[in-house]
Image 1 (cartoon, rainbow, N blue to C red):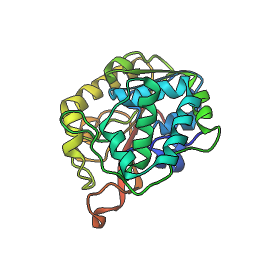
Image 2 (cartoon, rainbow, N blue to C red):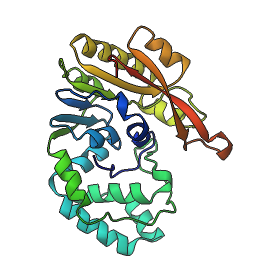
Image 3 (cartoon, one colour):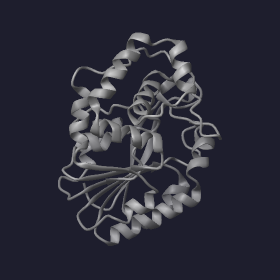
Length: 267
């Protein structure tokens, strides 16, 4: 079990902290087609895994960490010494040519941007302002441990349907798509709907049902909303999990909320 190296909007640290009992005890391979911070993967540290996402920068960062954690660690230590608004906005505006440099930049911006929020504009440019966090580097050996955990995994940029269709009987598929319905007043619907539409939700539901028919074990996180519940009304066991919401646009809308968890097995 490892702490994820990234902060991520919609991350599932709370899920493995409070609801790990919903995960199956035994499975063959592990698949996660919406990777994000990888909290469930780093909790399980399975023997075989396929990790994917459509976010190229995110996947490049995982790939670089898998193969060159010491090189990234050296750059982050350098950034720690030089961290300032000038460095932050300079890094935000420029993208290195090499993979290691891009991965270190991705982690640096993630650790020091406002609220750990990954967001790009319509031109695909990261545009989050600098936040109040000042810790850039990790404890000695941490990134090497992350690299060791990733040795079991194939990490790739891919559409979710391609990955889900690879699952077979006994595999565990954890699915945590962007939420594309208004949920908990978090104001991220406008952003996520551009990346992951309701038609994608329908396509995802079809792919999940195909995987279930092949015998895969399914765990799905999604918005606890009427449209999503209706989309899966005839599938699996539905659970309404309480959690603390920190992503609302105003403080008065922050507080306890629920998310929907669906499994096709009994925990």
